[in-house]
Structures are given as structure tokens and as C-alpha cells.
Image 1: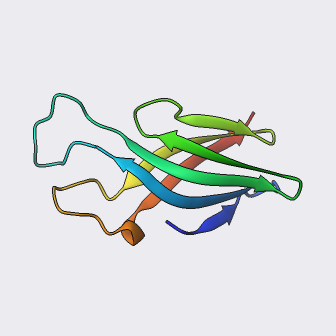
Image 2 (image 1 turned 90 degrees about the vertical axis):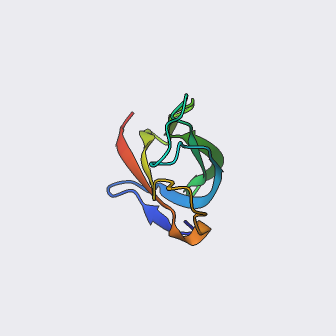
Length: 98
């Protein structure tokens, strides 16, 4: 969290700003619903920028921006019942042509 990356072969930058929701069921608990993780991103090119929210379970799980499709593939660490330090979050994205 707090980092950014340029999508190879494009001029698109993905900035991982925040985890705005983490209601995923802890790994040591039996839950009725798997829960959801939600991340706040800023997607940008030299001429455009957009703030978006992507989810692990709920919609939207992907977004189209500047000719590419970006999906939230995973959010780590997975909850264990202990508080997660915001700086420990790592989001993995799948990127493909639109």
C-alpha cells in the first residue's frame, strides 16, 4: 500500500492508495459469508486520472481504463483475527488489453 507501478507497455500508472474495507472472514473462523476486501486506487496516464475502488468479492472487481482492463487478483495478508498494519497490505492486479 502506498506504492505505484507503471503497467509495462503502457503509459498507465496504478497507485495503491488504501484498503477501504477488509471484512474477509478470518482464516481461523467459520463464517456465513467469505467477506470482501476493497482497495482504493488512482489510475493515471499523462492526460487523465481516475480514482476507483476494486473488490475481492463484491462488484466492481475490474475496471477498464486507457485501453486496458485491471482486475484485483488478490489482497494479502489474509485476515487471521489479529489487526493488520495498513503498511503490510499487498494488492496483486491482473492487467490485460481491453
